[in-house]
Structures are given as C-alpha cells and as structure tokens.
Image (tube, rainbow, N blue to C red; front, side, top):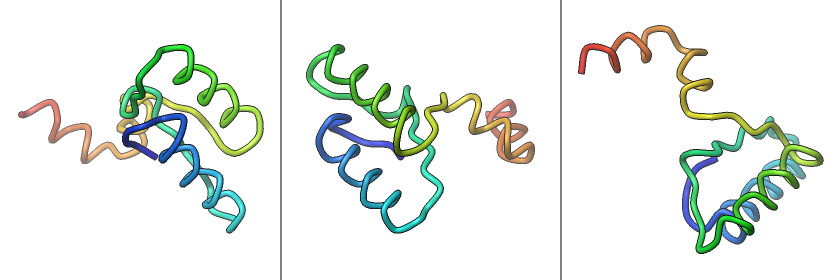
Length: 73
C-alpha cells in the first residue's frame, strides 16, 4: 500500500484488502498524512492487526531485478 493520507484513504484500502483475504504490505515511507502522530498510529494499527509494515527498500529487496534497475538509474 502507498498513498496519501496514511490514516484515511490508505488505511481504509488496506483494511478492505485484509477483509478480502489479500496479503497486505503497507509501505511506511511511501505513504504520508498531515501529522506524524497519525501516520505512526496507522502504521502501528496495520502492523498489529491488518498486515505487514515495510520500507520501500525492504520491498525492493524482494525483487532483485527491480533492485538492480534502481542501482543503474
């Protein structure tokens, strides 16, 4: 999951995906909202109940070909 606003639109999408049995990975550094506290609260909530929170770097490491392209650019 990526997007704006972490605590509203992105969290709602993540919850809906979870309820439809999707494996939710929520990027901590590719989402944002209007306050750090609200952002952090959503990351905690997702990590505890609805999915996994990861950085974009951690996600990119899952796809070696994509990671290699990023190094070239």
